[in-house]
Length: 257
Image (tube, rainbow, N blue to C red):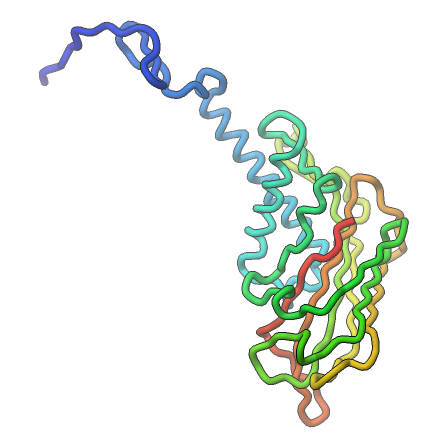
């Protein structure tokens, strides 16, 4: 087979390509700084870290995992963890997932991507977390079940659910080359409280209050975050029994302290 031999012998830089003795030795400035295989390794490490921290977040809300989460919840949570990781300290591939500092990024996270709490329930909500961060109080003033609740089907009652859990910062462990929680002391402590069934058809007639406390009332450390998620469920009352609906069921993270 005939071979073409260029009459040009280039040395130096042409655009983003570098030549030596007429041959391309590098494309793009980034490769002079980092072996591409090393960059892939770093990305994979951090990708695994965001998945692990997202799983930890959902475990903190495990009391409502089956009821309110959908098939996109894990990936959407991982995307938020990726945002937090990119703000973290440390070398590439080992950056800290500093949830304690950037916890505000968790606020407003909808557990269901279709049925969103902020679209279904529009009455004002007040949240109060105590000094030890082991108790969350939700206060909802008297509201209209007609004007403040937006649903697509005929129901007779609604019910609120408040899930509470804890998540810690996540960091890279050089011994096993994996991310892990830097403080999982209270990771297994979570709870769920619910209101009584509230009839649909006008004003509730009184304020609605939910109080959730972590088991054993631990005092959270600086690298731990209290996660509180408020959900709403709709029911139909038939022959003395309440039957829940699978749709128009939503929950949102409203506290990250």
